[in-house]
Amino acid sequence: MSPFTCAREREVTELLRQGYWPEACPEELRTHVETCRSCSDLVLVTQALQASRKQTLDIPHLESPGALWWRAQLRRRNAAIETVGRPILGAQIFALMLLIVVAAGGLVWKGTLVMAWLEDLPQALHLDALVPSALSKSGGMGWIVLPALATAALLSGVVVYLATEKQ
Image 1 (cartoon, rainbow, N blue to C red):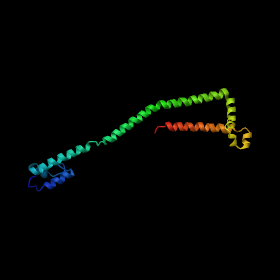
Image 2: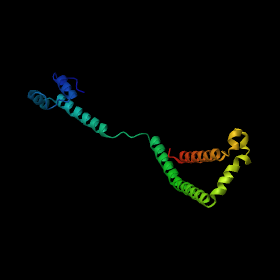
Image 3: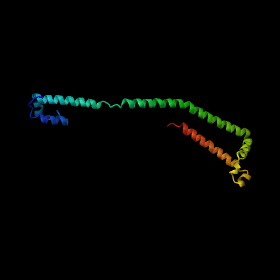
Image 4: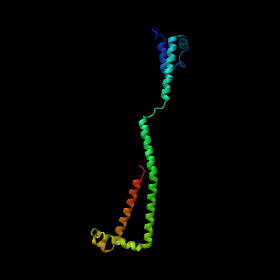
């Protein structure tokens, strides 16, 4: 650094800091900078540093490599789980449809036998001890067991759906 400073160096520094150089400065100051070595060096170095700073600000900031690796592993694991889960879901849907078809076929083919079995089921399981005696004498046990079985089937379907749902 030179031991002598220019008297207008402070004015040039302020214009450079505010970003007004050279468009918003007086003509006499521009001619002074062209003739003064100290001021021209100041303008040259400041503009170079400002350009370098602008370039570094334009570069996107990447996340840490560890976070990028972790996200890639998570995506790969989720893709593998989804790939494996598709055939399992298809098998579950096929099994449910097969169960519905067999149940409907069984009701059509042996509907009266199934109804008689459902009416005898509470006595075989000794559920008549839980039902009031007036209801068991009227033969209403079939109307209790059938909704209970339907509720169990519905709840099992909900459980299967929730177990295979994407997380």
